[in-house]
Length: 182
Image (cartoon, rainbow, N blue to C red; front, side, top):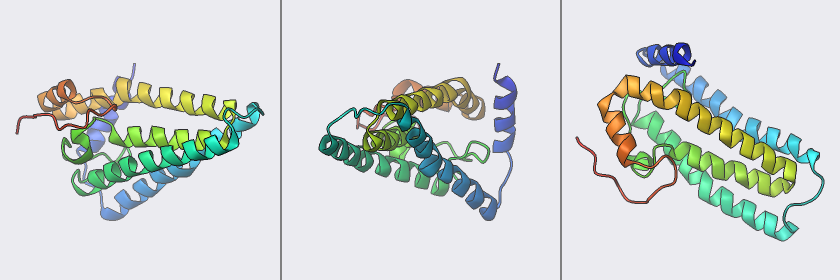
């Protein structure tokens, strides 16, 4: 069902992109994740007027989610830009297979961090609608990773990625470095 999209992404991975092109792609992708998705969560917060948590608890929970999530996202994005020679945006993918840095702890550190970041916004908005929107976005992103991204990575990196996938958790980190070949 997604084979055409996967082939398109694999073909894009074989191209070289200028620093400017990579910068624009990164800024556009970051804008969507930093502002766009939280705005959507905010819009859906108007669907349920009742607070989920007491106000102080919501603020504290939000802060904890932000403090836990933002470093994961930042580290993963920087690793993709500097070590992977690409971007976190799927249409300008990394050139190098990444199994070091944050990727030694989980296969999707950027998404792990983003989920925590998004939960921080849902907690800050503190409405059932915001939590529902955040959960729907998380499920959609997991489906995209499972149905498209992992298949694309298998095509691009073959057995190296399959072995990495066997030894490295999806995004719940074990906080220990897996033993990978090479």
